[in-house]
Image (cartoon, rainbow, N blue to C red; front, side, top):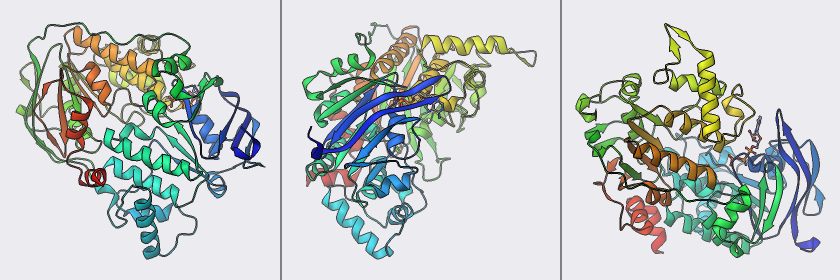
Amino acid sequence: MTGGNVLLQLDGLTKAYPGVVANDDVGFTIGRGEIHALLGENGAGKSTLVKMIYGLVKPDAGQMILAGREFVPDRPASARQSGVAMVFQHFSLFDALTVAENVALGMETPPPMRELADRIRSTSANYGLPLDPDRTVGDLSAGERQRVEIVRCLLQDPRLLIMDEPTSVLTPQEVAILFKTLRKLAAEGTSILYISHKLEEIRTLCDAATILRRGRVVARCTPREKTARELAELMVGTVLTPPERAATPKGDVVLEVAALSAPSPIPFGTALRDIAFKVRGGEVLGIAGVAGNGQDELLLALNGELPTAPDCVRIHGRPLGDCGPQVRRQAGLVSAPEERLGHAAAPDMTLTENALLSGALRRGLVRRGFIDWARTRSFAESVIAGFDVRTPGTEVAARALSGGNLQKFVIGRELSQEPAVIVVNQPTWGVDAVAAAAIRQAILDRAAAGAAVVVISQDLDELLEIADSFAALNEGRLSPPRPVAGLTVEEIGLKMGGAHGMEVAHDAS
Ligand SMILES: Nc1ncnc2c1ncn2[C@@H]1O[C@H](COP(=O)(O)OP(=O)(O)OP(=O)(O)O)[C@@H](O)[C@H]1O
């Protein structure tokens, strides 16, 4: 690449945390108008690298050159001033404010509201991401919220747009719209640095890829010249095996949900409406849906954090709808919510303490009122070893783990409790290909051992791979479950997104 075509050049970037070198002498270039993928397994150092470019983390060594000039962003505002914008995995929007008010909050000197609303309308229409500036953010779907974040970035006219796993909250139809927008931006000269674990998407979208392993650049390639499997193997340095599904005979009904209706305990949440399904021992029920359609509420109603009438939830025939989490855990139900930091794990507690929080009852970690720390630590160690959690040890705080590694820990902790019923929401969200395959295999193994499993996920390939039956959650209603055999991703995608007028209208245009 000639000098004039390079937008960002990274040289020798290094950043160490206690016990781990997150980035070790990382160097590569991003061309103008190039869509550049940053790939790597969980904990490889992708987030650390983009945080350095966005001014959130200061490198220990190395340099960056942006458009021919030394670039030393000391905070996000200075990165933004230099033309670097970032769309995060977790949205940072205020539910109670309108789209325009949220956008204004992120600007250094916002224009008058009416002018800003006009700019939002025209920019969003221009890039195929229609948005109504007057709508309250709390009423928007996940896909629409992401539009707010992207349009907020586009209003800054960025030279480099960083996107961290942008498609994990989108339906296949929304992904197609996003990719059209990103291609248009690239054609206009904006460079895009794109982090994702979805390798087929990388192959269709990206012009170049840099692959990190344990903090170092281990390969560079043109993604469309590789297969998804080859990309995954470059990331992990080993050969992959797809999950195996034993033809397990299904047992009796273990989990039965009937006439389950409940208002949402979450502000701007979705009420559950007359949900009914049965799951047999050995069966995996996959529940698809765009985030914000009642997934979180359904998980809470199943795990006991949202009590209902007794008959709404039965385990082995026992009515438990009005019982709390402890009673349900005793009855054999384990669960892992989508939000790993804060809900599934306490951020400032160590892994040992986090293991105690959910494992105490079923793993016998408390005896005669005393915590058995040795036993708890060895439980945490067994989860770390069994699920390949990359961490310096059990006494590390949950928040110090990379997103994917914490997810492996949380899922491993739940699956290691001999469950009769497993309820998980987005079990492989943010998890790399190898670890995702391991998590899916572990879920299938527990099903083969007789557990009834409910997997809530937006990843349709995942549901098709592991589920026996399938249902879609839309505005708090569940479609009647049907066997997975014979369903295609397109059919499921349409079922999931069908009720979202904006996407459909845009799709047809
Ligand atoms: N604030 C921190 N304190 C201590 N260690 C950290 C911190 N942030 C990251 N790390 C460690 O640095 C390494 C790289 O983490 P990073 O989040 O950059 O990985 P990643 O490639 O983005 O992973 P993932 O795909 O799971 O999000 C990991 O071992 C992680 O545990």
